[in-house]
Image 1 (cartoon, rainbow, N blue to C red):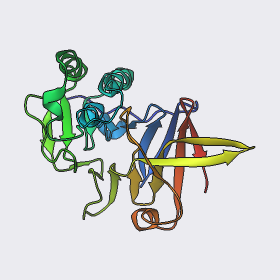
Image 2: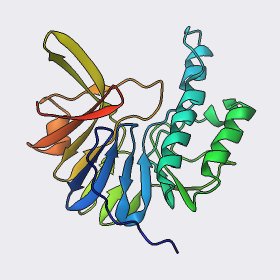
Image 3: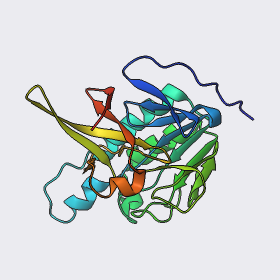
Image 4: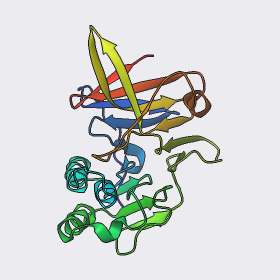
Length: 233
């Protein structure tokens, strides 16, 4: 059994250590979150094969999104070498996405996961069941370090880390427009940014659904220029 790593101080702009519901959590500008107490890396909403889904329907979009998402996934997994990786749902864009993975991308995904003791595919609304033939196991949700990890909000005691909403911020600073994905942390819910290379986003404002999800007080961490920036609305 691996011993969970102690939380380490983080001071650079590429990572930010926060206490979410009293639990140490490292937010990473690459779009993942690391839970030191459980030696667990969390990513959400990879949406693998989204490009091929739209291309097959006549939409003129690039179909290289899976390769880029897997490149970024390999990078962040290598950076933490965690005992566990949790993909928080919508890892695949649709039920047939697994069959559209190229042999090279299948091998790439297997290579990323091969040294991870526990790879967990949490069910999403796009992929309610994990595809066959993948390294790892499926789960409706996961309870770790006093937190519930799920794709969408669930009825559960305590705090939750979820995906699904693809939060992003759109700001104007000194006459410049700045847009990027973000983490959003309330008292009882933290919403992960979408990790996939070809995903849209829902702008975080003081309007619905954010107050219903997060209450009246929350913090945003904007990902911009490969750095994290705390932002107050």
